[in-house]
Length: 288
Image (cartoon, rainbow, N blue to C red; front, side, top):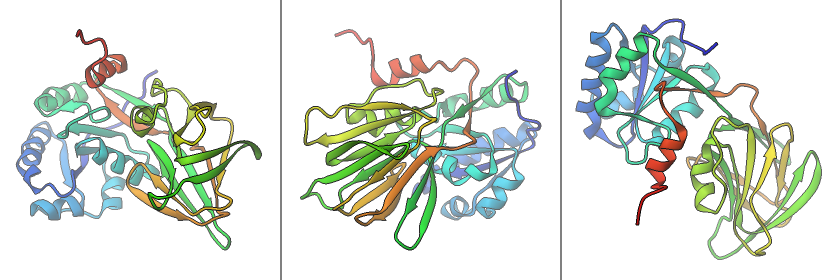
């Protein structure tokens, strides 16, 4: 049986950052929600940007039935990762350019909210990754929705990355870095670096080398019942999470990556078809 929300009484919004011009759009959408009996609250940082009253982010996540990102895919990525521990479904309203994840267009909001209230929607369970960065005297834990990218700290040098699966070394990557992606993130940086497209509800890790020194290095798909460990024996690196958060790694630091026990929840239109999205966003099948 498809998962449904127990109630639809309150929605928590975050807005595209550094975009105060989005204020009028937000107020129009807020009116649509509230006319249909859904109370709207907005996170403090977003509220301050547009001169409105807001609530602290974690408080908003705790008290709302579902969350809404108004912006592009980057805004949705940030919301999914920051709200992950609250286990609340996230709806993406696309006020950006691409819209792989935030798939409800501004012109569709009123119709979608009506369908939401009538139960005509679906909740997708998307894989999340857990990263634990082990340093000499400490460790740090984080979550990733799209990808974790290990890259060089300066443009003038390459990095060597020893990669282990279940504690057994299987490869040494030598080049500009390595992308460890979820299937959701397959159409992001990994795709640009030559990685495969994967159906987003698949459970797998995608390891895609970035400009490898050896042309024999190729992307690798790994089941999620394995754990991945990445170490740079001689180089400093930077781990970039979803293109938004950075973690410095010194030589010898170890990054362990596993699948999170609970996935992220995305609210979608019932009829959303991933292959249609690919045709639309990537222009597959266009005639010359």
